[in-house]
Image 1 (tube, rainbow, N blue to C red):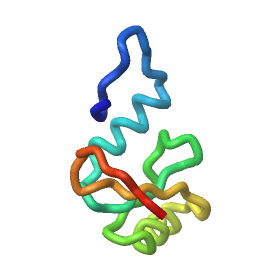
Image 2 (image 1 turned 120 degrees about the vertical axis):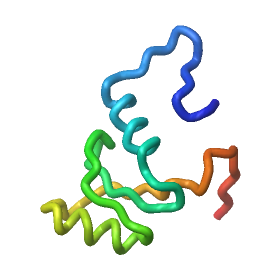
Image 3 (image 1 turned 135 degrees about the vertical axis):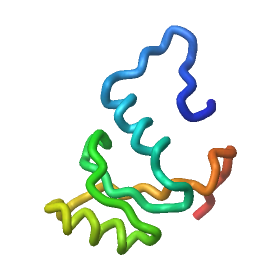
Image 4 (image 1 turned 60 degrees about the vertical axis):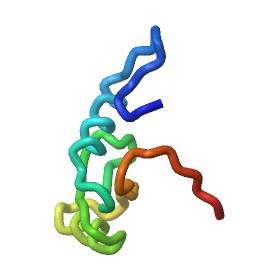
Length: 79
């Protein structure tokens, strides 16, 4: 399903809405550093290290990191 869409009858929680807003506002192909439940943006950067450093500058030393994709097309990730 597309970013922001919901299955009929499904309601988004405030946590879901906050996370969705953060990732929707983020610049494509960048890293974001979030709090544990994904509701607060602690830092961001063009690399993993930059996002960690930005979070540390903002007083947070244990962020959860996500790579924002270049676009929101479906993709498969293989290890």
